[in-house]
Length: 198
Image 1 (cartoon, rainbow, N blue to C red):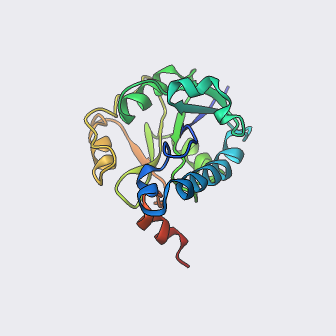
Image 2: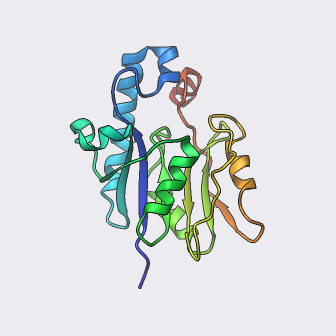
């Protein structure tokens, strides 16, 4: 029997001034909030309702998990918990029911179901899979979690060009990792301008 696949989308409460703060520095808080809501809805709606995997929405702050803030987005809700991004992703990797887990964010507007399906396919023969971002980070990370959950998120310089390299360095020597295509993460106005360019 094929193991259940779990897709977890990390999302921040969609409130003005709380999401996409670096983008807001360039285009203003309302425009950044509008971009975040539209992009997240367009990406998450088809992904978290796809029947090939179970869709989860990991939210922050934790109190927002039980509110109506995310009612327009699908997925079973869970709180990310405290700590840096690595601590939160490690917690979710450990908390999920058995089966491979893929975590995505809401910053890559070109992410679609074909990327997620390919990630799960690659986890059939690799221990880890990454979707590299143009800025040196990553828009997707997945772990096979068999025979154990690898601890790959410690000592990572998050929100820098070293994030992917640092995470790969945490893989044990025997572990194999696969790469998906590079996509653009929209973190600031420069990224948005690049993405909108013809």
